[in-house]
Image 1 (cartoon, rainbow, N blue to C red):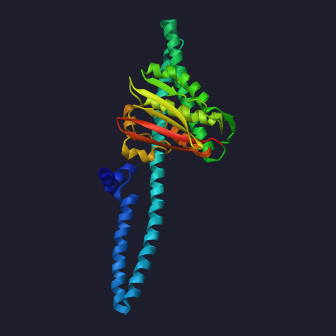
Image 2: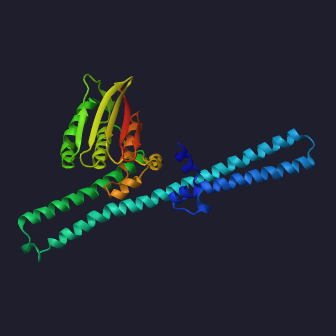
Image 3: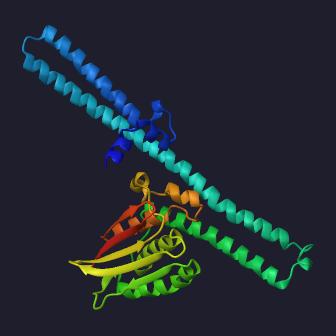
Length: 315
């Protein structure tokens, strides 16, 4: 707890996180404004006591002036903070998209270099098939990123309509787990789903909720090292279905947890691993769950794994 408080008070570190100098940083400007308000209040008090006889009127006037200045400074600083956050996210967007696009495009370039007419005679049919599979995989990576960007655009423009129908959520999850089994086994990770009995149907958009669960399972497997575990549970709690997916993966550093549902954000420890991802999946998942009337949250500890939860109303 003391570490968390210290990080909040560590203004230079927060400014570095935004990539700004002290005099451009919202937290530092807020501190400066606070000092100015205190000084202005003292000056106003001294002037008031010199010209006004009643000390209560002076105190009230100082309080009103200080409150007005504080509100004005808070509004200004919040605006600066939003601009700083937008700047940070823009930089991250450029870094992520350029990195995610550069790798597959470079791979495609080399594949086509090897498959040019002058070189194909030197390549065996097995090697040629390997190159074509590599090209296909890299094209799929770029399509996946573009699809995520299009979904985000539709969400923000309010053009992501719901087509609700009654479904058994456990059947949808069972199908997805079967599909991800191959990915999990290839990564030497144990993937398990504990389906309950006699759960009621829920009224949701199947394609949207499928996208949410796909993102959560994919992240859990991708960010868990070999010999790890990913466990999924589903149960009825009151008037909601309660979904839980727990992994034994990298976890999310505490300093990054408040940003985890933001667009294009990826935790620092994940970036170091150079794990593939756009930083859009959790933003999309949160938008969909909230649109369906549910809630999504998580618990995580760096190096110990992460558990994501979401609830959806039964009716």
